[in-house]
Image 1 (cartoon, rainbow over the protein chains, first blue to last red):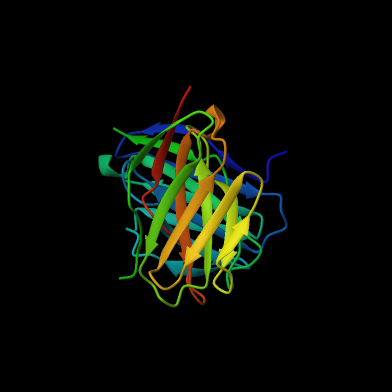
Image 2 (cartoon, one colour):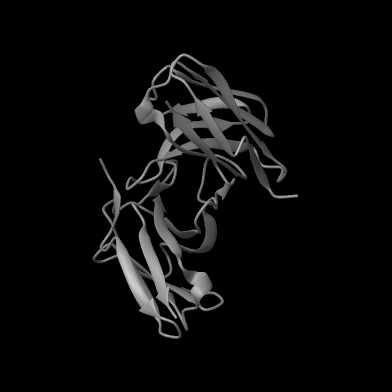
Length: 114
Length: 111
């Protein structure tokens, strides 16, 4: 079983739809992250959770709503998205939020907004 | 704000040759640096990291060099193989800030 699992791997949605992305980590980590990866842009940090508490929101529009029910699960709820939100959404986890350390990434959810 | 950037967006290397991927960072307080490899359709995978109290670290076929004087980081891949074809990202960390990623360099290995 992979360390960080994301579902669905691919999602196509209209601008009025509501959908959710799911992330689950099996590494016993305490911090989880959402990143957005667009073509020709650096990885953009969206949200950070540490011990289930949101510690960072990187000026993300409210049409993206994260949820972290426990240290192993992270969701990204999507509502009224725009075509420019089409991107690869990557979930990652680390042992803890503070301090240097490796991030473990999932395979990503490829989102297309029509 | 502070950022991490890459010198070249693409790099083509003959199979068997050594590859060098460069990265410049701007935060002089950065104390931890990491390289990731991302293959097509996959998430980034850890390659190697280095702390600011070191200037060189070696892994299996990879070496990371850190020059804090000029704020430069490089990843060297020895005897590059077709499986090394991917996008390579550097990232840096300072204090309690999350990792800041560069844009990435696409490495293409010519057989």
